[in-house]
Length: 151
Image (cartoon, rainbow, N blue to C red; front, side, top):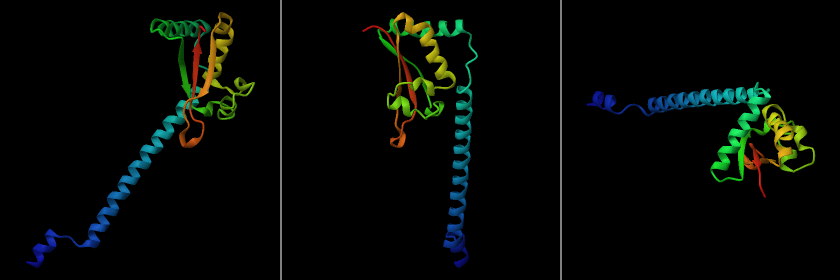
């Protein structure tokens, strides 16, 4: 009977070793996923920190499409972009504080959008707003870009 019980009910020490092994496997898998997510995020930030590669005509057409779609949906403003605060030289501090000259902290595509607005949209009465849209852990996070028109 003792042999059968040992087959049915393993030693507690063995069970602890098996549980620890499973936990280690889970932790390793979690670490791999976290590393992959971080690598993907860094690649995205790298891509966004560089010029888009679009011509001026392509940018203007894209802006027109986005604005016209918003108007057809009865909107008077539209969020055209959202980006990590790391694309600002000060991590979005000047935007969050609404300091004069905040636009000088922009890099990459967010800077291109600002320049497109300044060159083509502002002279036609459009407004632009860059604002922190989330606060993970109480700190400024992503920044949204809103184009607005009308009163």
